[in-house]
Length: 281
Image 1 (cartoon, one colour):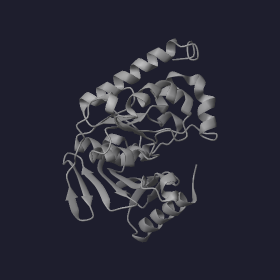
Image 2 (cartoon, rainbow, N blue to C red):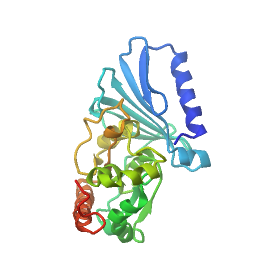
Image 3 (cartoon, one colour):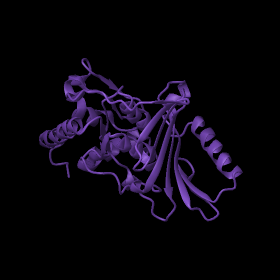
């Protein structure tokens, strides 16, 4: 779903780039792939990740830009610069491949700081449900929500970039988006995904992860899909349904492993349940 604030932000990006007359390509949520001249680089841009927060003045909204050398098939592993800027304050997250990640509050550099929590019982995490059918997601993750909601905390911030960058500030321990794995494992849920997405399957698109994946990994965060597999081969200029991803990010290998093991176990249990038995891949 596109809000007016998204269209305004996209137009600001278009004007900013076109005014400079630079040979450049960019790919964004609303515009798709735009090329000018003979581009040597491509920007993967989400002008507003967290549109729902932006339109009500809630802080969970950012600008996200990833940079790669231009070629016909750009993948996540080709992103060599990532930058994310909070829209409601001066926090900026920046990384260059192989050079680590930096966090700035205005001109002041801050330390990357992970929480020390490694327990699911006190997990402080963000769960993505926007445009996904909530019932099957809570069928799988409901136990983890119940385990962690009191001693830790469960948030639905509707912004992948905002959520994962809060791990780098030590505010959150993890971020989880199982939507795409849920659809792959249980394809009979497709009508529910279409209903929740108002006629389209909604999930994690390339512009959602282009910058934040590099920044998180350079900072030392563990980030994979919801199977525990790498995301490096994700195509950056393809927003088709078959390129939608799932994602689990955590503050450490140990906690990431705990979360993936929990998800794997719950998928096995769901496949044996009466509601899901015989309908899975």
